[in-house]
Length: 274
Image 1 (tube, rainbow, N blue to C red):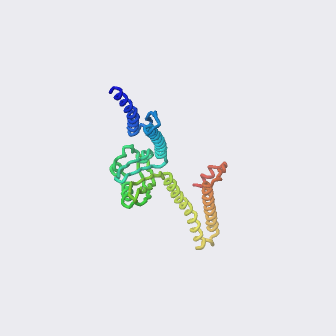
Image 2 (tube, rainbow, N blue to C red; image 1 turned 180 degrees about the horizontal axis):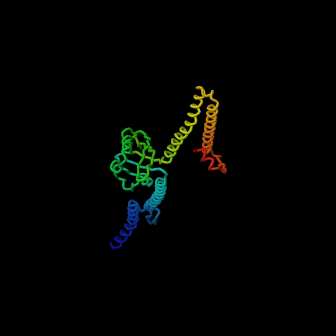
Image 3 (cartoon, helix red, strand yellow; image 1 turned 120 degrees about the vertical axis):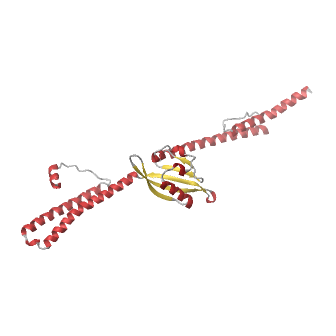
C-alpha cells in the first residue's frame, strides 16, 4: 500500500507540476508579465503545452514591446508637431491633446482630458465649430483669433469627423495652424498698398491739375507756363522714381536679390522731402 501510494504521488506530481507551472505562467501573462516562462522538462503532450505557453509569452512580449515603441514614437510626434491637435470622442469628452495646445490657449490643457469640450473651452467660435462638425459630420475649415494679455494670435482650424465601421461617428479631430505671421504680413502688404496709392495719387493729381490749367489758357502766359511745366517735370520725375522704387521692391522677393550699397547725400534727400 505504501509503495502504491508513493508511486501514485510521484506520478500525480509529475503530471500536475507542469500543469501548475503552465497555470502560473498563464496568470502572469494575464497580469502583463510577459517575461514569465515555464520549465520545459519533457517532450510529451504536457511538454508541448509548456512549449506553446512559452512561445505565446515570447510573442506577446515582442508584440507589446513593438506596440510600446510605436506608441512612444506617436506620442513624441504628436507632442512635437508644429500644430495644435485635439481629439474629442463621440460623447464630447476630450481624450487627446498635444503639448502645443498649451501655447495656443495659454493654460495647462492636460487638465482638459476627460472633460466635455464646452466645459473647458472658453472661445465661442471654437465651440460652435465643434458643434457644427458633430451635427453635419462634415469637414470644416475656419480662422479664429485668440487674444492674450499682450498679443493677438491668429489660427486656422481644420476640423474633421472620425468615422468607424458603418460610418458611425467615433469622434472629431481638430488641428490648429498658427497663421499669425501670415496675417501680419498681409497687414503689412495692405498698409504698403495704401501708402503707395497715396504717394502715387499726389504726383498724378498735380500733373492733371497743372495740365488742365495750361490747357485752360495759362499757356499764353510764358512765365506761368514755364513755372507749370517745371512743376510737371518734377512731378513726373517723382512719379518715375516711385515706379522705380516699386520695381526694386518687387526684386526683394526674388531668389537672386543683392543689395547695391551706395554713398548718399542725406542733406540733398532732406531738401527733396521738404
